[in-house]
Image (cartoon, rainbow, N blue to C red):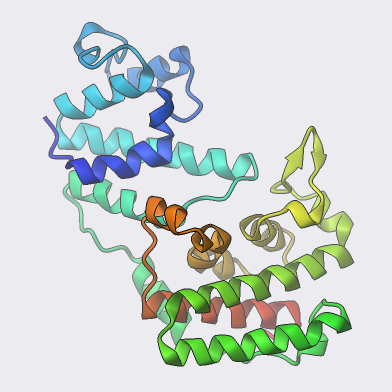
Length: 276
């Protein structure tokens, strides 16, 4: 029996969409194939303790197997979750994904801390200057609004209103990336990560910030560290609703706010062509 705790299980339940009875996009056949690689007959009687749906079989699996086996299987499933999101133009819930990965590390007996913490520290220590607003790809009418929000974000950061910082930074970055997309529609619409609807690219105003970031990084407008450290910003609109914030487990602190503001500064420098 694995040592997976109830609160830990909830992260995997949420990421894999198990409340529906399904697990990710697995069919019965692909679910069986997935587990056969680990010499597990997931459709056998051993894993029907709670029922016959794929979600119930996965719950029986992590109740009955060792930490090492459960950790290995869940690790690959997390990779499948991330791949599905990226291939389908959906945003990855990086907050939940990172927490789930730490749980997998614990199950596998590895260190909980990740090397990414050191790289994040290096990113925070770099100096990025906010460029002149007129150099950004936005309409002149929007310039005073962007300037006001940048100033307000600075004030909010000093005041310790962390969620406000995230809303302000997210809205500014979304506006500037939207402007960039409108100036280069062909590049944005032909990327691998371009979100589609009924086989055609979505209209730009329908894109999420996460999708704008993914495509901008793919076509080289933003550097990859923006994508790597932007998890606090990517789904900022969700956190406007208290229930969505509760479900996501997102609890921003001073560090989160500083990372978000640093991501915004670096992204604006990229978009203005001023970043080295």
